[in-house]
Image 1 (tube, helix red, strand yellow):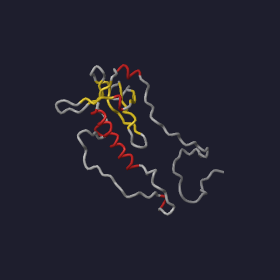
Image 2 (cartoon, one colour):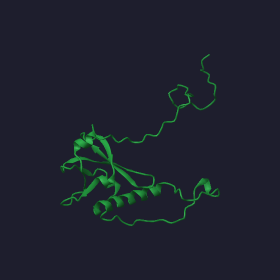
Image 3 (cartoon, one colour):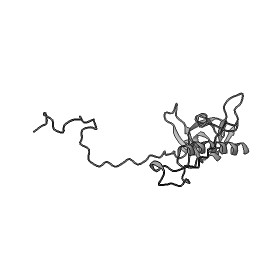
Length: 175
């Protein structure tokens, strides 16, 4: 149990570091004197010098085998869902299919998994208290799709191609 907690905490911290490095700080006061509306930061940085044995990199975590309650492979990690603060919300598991064709994705909270150490130098695996059939019957994970901007109806029907530059009138314009 402690090992699972440490792994989840370490993964959450790693994801939070990446999220904080990419997102602007919401705690930083904005100033009208800062250039181009950029917020000023305190200048403090918290570098991580090395990966620890109980930490996983997302690049290595993706593809990790997921074992069922019967110790048979039931899928693998296809993605990691985390919130804007970097907290890991779920591991997205690809279940069924062959080489990704016909598979479905389900998402489960990190607390649903136990880490099974790899043997003889093999990679660690994740274990669920579920079977492949239970995951196949589970609700599909729906990825967020941002709304598409509404069209204004100003399309000229030209197929979106480039317009020639130059004078607006053309000697070959129809009458």
